[in-house]
Image 1 (cartoon, rainbow, N blue to C red):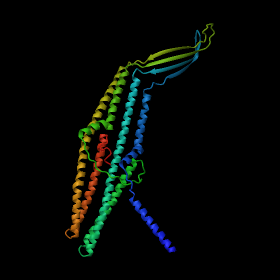
Image 2 (cartoon, one colour):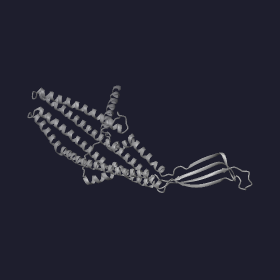
Image 3 (cartoon, rainbow, N blue to C red):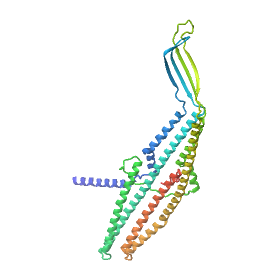
Image 4 (cartoon, one colour):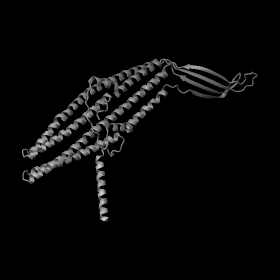
Length: 429
């Protein structure tokens, strides 16, 4: 009876483990999505955080720039009192406030606002660079993952071919050299797998640094990337780059800031104002005057006299030259941007055509060639070396296809970086 119960428990346990294993195999493993990696980088990358803090700090400068300077309160003690008809002067309190010429404070606030916009666009530049680096790492991992998958599949095919060659040799229909060639090819594939795994680890370490993770943090397989069907016009890319590229926006804000600085220097030809108020403490005297000991006060106004015109003209000339320099800088960035857009446009176009060539021509032909070689080898019409060449060619073409897809993704990511705009609507990944 005990043996029956024990056997029954064993059967239940085996059935449960089998069900558990089947369930675990059916559960889809979560793959790393590009959008999630980008979002994590934007939230966690320390370089982005630093750039954002600099931008936020520059915003705090705006209210400072357009505020009046602090008033000045001063005190004077008469060591030797000055006698007046109302009594001796003992203490003097003074309060003064400086007022810049009309419009100066407003211009200073606008200059600070343009400077904050410069920091904002620099923040956008840093974000765009980090996102581009994440995308490049993602597409590199996409290639490594698919290359590893294909290479492992090819290894299984080679192992099957090695068994066929072994059976043919054992039955006298083949030779030992075919068996040795098959095992040699398997060893070569095994070595390639090790190299691919090591390369993948290096890419993951770089990506983890962008995500502010530990270099050894685990990263699952990359989500599948489908090459998008792109319908891009070069003139549209030029227009988008002029409008959205953060470097060009930053250059425009620099021109704007320098133009306002020139207006401010012209305001320096006009005087600033200073209003003062004095209160004098007068001690009691020995007179019979009913106002004896009464304190006194006075108000006054002053202006600075901008008579050193040479200094002012030099300051104005400096501001004008800075405008010209920033305008030339903008033109230089614009020329480089449009040239890069043109280059990447045709690079993306060529990469897209290459992907289609692999997908619709080279891979089907290589697969047909391998099938024909395999049938011919089994029939004794094709030698084993030709069969291995067909297998090797299919492996190279398949890995070449995914390399072309990854290159297309990288080129498209660089084009989006230069243009400053998403060109796929998020459908590419």
